[in-house]
Length: 119
Image (cartoon, helix red, strand yellow):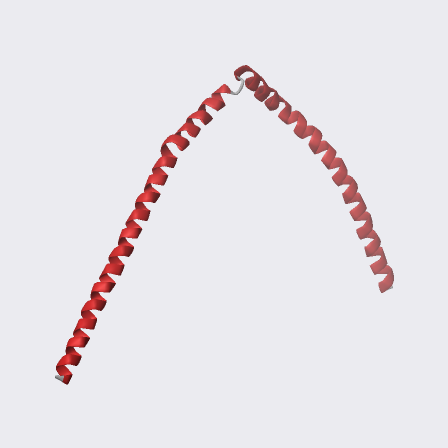
């Protein structure tokens, strides 16, 4: 009896899966038709605007952005990068100079202490 119950459940699951597949196929076709119909008006308006304006209103804005980026923003970024690079190089030179001076004074102190100790 348990085997019969499990087999009937398996058959019911298979039938439910087949029904679900059929309903999904029908839903896909209905969705695609409804979606196409709902977007048709909007797409027609967009096409009409595109043909009337020939995308000039978009191109003008893009052209201004392109001009701004290429002629103002990029040179400023390059100048800032060069400035920070020069500052980093100067800081590196100062650190090396500071180390050399410190090392020189430390060596002179040690040499002086050794001379005083042995003289």
